[in-house]
Image (tube, rainbow, N blue to C red; front, side):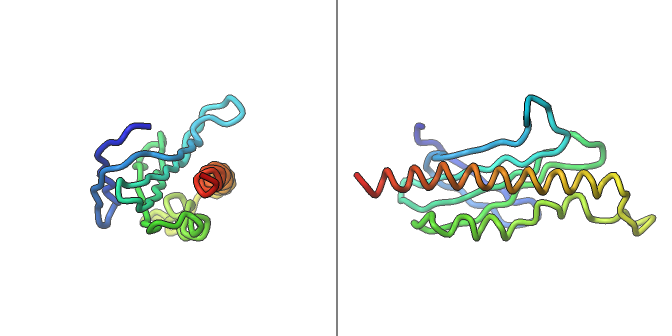
Length: 140
């Protein structure tokens, strides 16, 4: 993949700009041929200086919900990626109770279970891809 400019603007947090490329990505929009209402897209970037960033984008088509971007810097070593990705809470956007009732709708609990399971699948897929890339790079 070619080198490009990236701007990761974390929802409610800091932003980072860098020049680099996407080295791996996975999306959860389609699973078993079905479109999803909520999903996570995960990306791994490598800057021209060799630093690695990972981003998680929570995507939603549900009413009254918004997309959410989270990212983390890994330095130059991708081996910490699984630990970093587990620091992100994939259920936070779904399990926040509405102010008027203070309770989470049981349908949202089921949606959260589905989203959480699919997030863990995406993390596993991304780790496999990055591990393969890392082992190929260390052999060269």
